[in-house]
Length: 183
Image 1: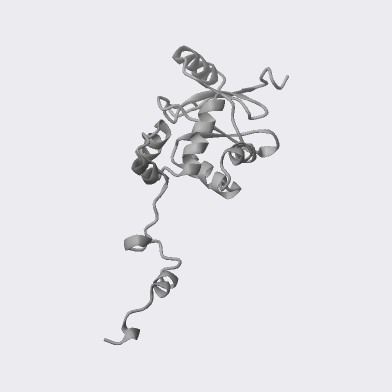
Image 2 (image 1 turned 90 degrees about the horizontal axis):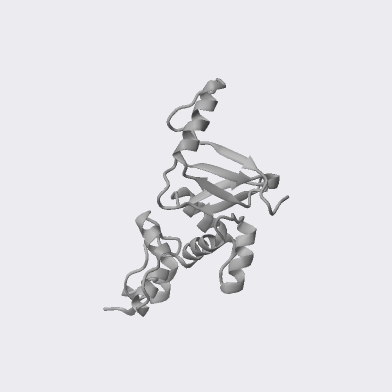
């Protein structure tokens, strides 16, 4: 057999550049959760929530979820989230934070609200709430509280119906006001 019959390993790497399928053998890339599982670390609640929604538990996604859990009921925008997480992790980029926030919001793990100057703020969505949850929100967008009072919901529905609004089962009420911090 001639030496040119088998391509050198570097050619394999170059040829596979841009492929979505990982290389076979020793070139496989391990992601965050697999590395933690091998190290013997228990999986966190963030990782369980991510896998339940079909998302790969990366360092950026798990860190964003844990940070939002710590600051609840406050909301964070992407730039503030990056400032917080960049002090904890050296190799976490702003693009990773933006992608993680978008992925988590799309999967239904986060609630997105609009604040001052049309900036997007994110809050963690409690597991018990469905997509039809009413909220109490500050005008600045940095604070979001979920309303779980059924009597208040029924009162708001009857008041809206009495004023001529078309209210159906999927209607969501958002009460916008000013929090004590913004006063």
